[in-house]
Length: 108
Image (tube, rainbow, N blue to C red; front, side):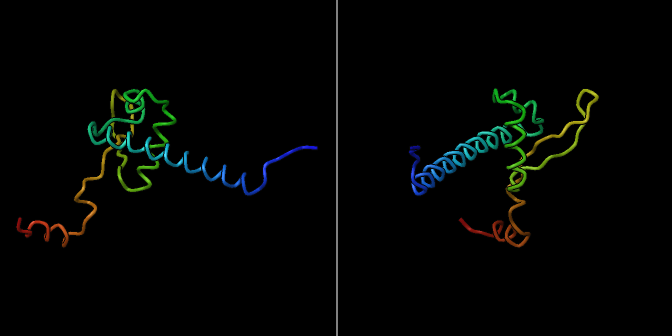
């Protein structure tokens, strides 16, 4: 007779695994985002090298950050090659012109 965990236990274990993976991804993305803010304009390979990550891990994180609107990719030529530069979105881009004007007029 083969003993297996009940579906309820399996579901709980899976949800814990999913949450752990999600947290690890968020930590990875935060590490990448901090580096991009400190060194804007590098490409995925250069960022991966600085973090001692695989290029795939770095590129995955970059794509998630881009999807969430925190960074943008621009094309540039480096050493005769076309590369994608990774740059952070400036904080001003998260606000409307009216909101930015309101910030200017605030008294502290």
